[in-house]
Structures are given as C-alpha cells and as structure tokens.
Length: 312
Image (tube, rainbow, N blue to C red; front, side, top):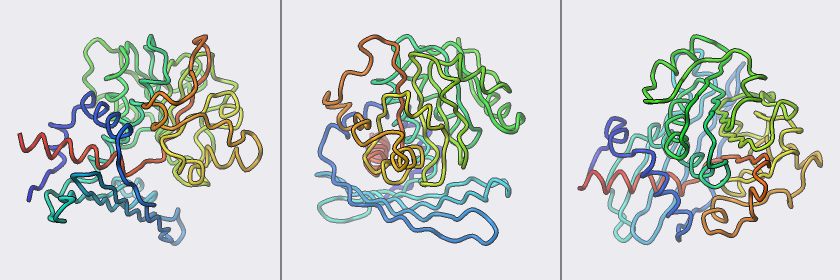
C-alpha cells in the first residue's frame, strides 16, 4: 500500500496530463453513485459540509471523504480537508491513500481547464481569477496548460491575499498581477475563473463582453452565487454533470426563478468530450459559462493517474 502525499501529487499530476486523463474518463465507463452530502451545523457561522464520494471503473474503486468548513479562513486554516482511498476493483484491497486536499484542488482546476478546452476561444490570452483561496493558483496553472496566456490578473477582497497568490506563481512569459477594479478586470478578460464562497454575485452580466468564457467553481450550495442572473441569461450554459442543476446556486436559483430553463443547460463534460453538445462558437462572440459542482469521476481519474505514475 502506498501513501501519496501532497508533494508526490504536485510532482506527478502535471495539469496537461491530468486534463487529458479527465477527458478520457468522461468519455469512458465510470460508475458514480450519488454522493453523500451532509450538512453539519455550525453555531453562529456558516454550516459545514461532509461529503463522501465513491466511483469505480473496471480496474479501480475509489472513495473520497471531505469536509468543507467555511469558517476556517478566519482561523488561518484551509476550508477543505479530504482524503482518498484507491482500491483494487476486483479484490477490494487498498492500493493507496492519497492526500485528498491536493487531489481535489488539482482535479477541480483540471476540470475547469478541460471545459475551457471546448468552450473558450482558442486565442484567449487574458485570464482573471476571482478569489484568493487554495484553488486560485491551481486554476491559473491549469488554464495556462490549455491556452497561451499572456496576462493573468487576481482579484480578492483582501489585496494582500491576492498579492500572495501572485507571488506564488512562476509562469514564464506571462504577466501576473493583482487588480482592485473588478468591473474593469471582468470587461477586459477572455476567461474569468471564480473560486469563492460568496453568497452574493460578484460577476455582473452588464460588465461582460462578447466572446468571454466564465468559469464558476465556487458556489457549491443553493444559497451561494458567484454570477448574477444577467450573466447567466447571457451565456451558453454548460455544467460538469447535471448534479450542478440541483446543488449549485448559480444554476438552480436562475432555474427556480425562470431566468433560464432546463433547455438552456446545453451540455456536460460528458457530452462535450463525446462531441454530442451543440456547436459552441459558430461566430466566436458568444459568452460561454461552465459551472463546476465536482464529481467523483474526476477524483478517480486523478488518483489513478498519480498511482500509476508512482508505480513507474
């Protein structure tokens, strides 16, 4: 049995390879039972979440357990803790324990980058990342694996945290900087990637420009919103899986209020990778939107890639 820690995962899960592994997984045959999603009440604060996410294919079986603690930021702690067990599908024997936080961050960012492969313009060069948490540098590196970025801006409510994200990056040939004027930054970006726990929309549709791609990664409960109704209504909407329709506020809230209908959800990572989704950019000026809710397929694909690379 192997223990694959965060440093191991950082070494073996380069984003280009991980994006390709996710693409293969979404095209393949993976069983994903409904994930267990439990609300853990927190006195005088935002409720916490316990997740249990199993998945298996013909060779491997994996189980992730994760906690999402919105109050941890005030304690200087990560908001997500997780671990992953990879088992032999035939015998049930445990093959590896993996650091679930690093695995989750990398596979989440890679899923957004996979969506960008299909939904953003090929010539997209300017990326705006909204949010300064654990995911921010992962999203930047993942998006950079798919598009020839020349300019990256990072916005956060606290400028010093945005500066910390910028300082952590080394992207040759790419200008990386903080930005304080969110409206202007949104208007100028080619790709906008949001990873926050915001309860109120940060991205406003009236700020957006033709041809942009909006990547919404946070907002994992029905009460969270990263984009307003105008942004949602303007966009051609895609999700990682249809679970997002029921769990993510940026999708279920506009559906509930008639801003969009079920017919406006144009596809998933399954239909995109299989070529079954409708044409995305016949004129090149549509606004596209990808809402990520997370799926155990991504965890399994990342864990298998790491395990097999560690095996040599």
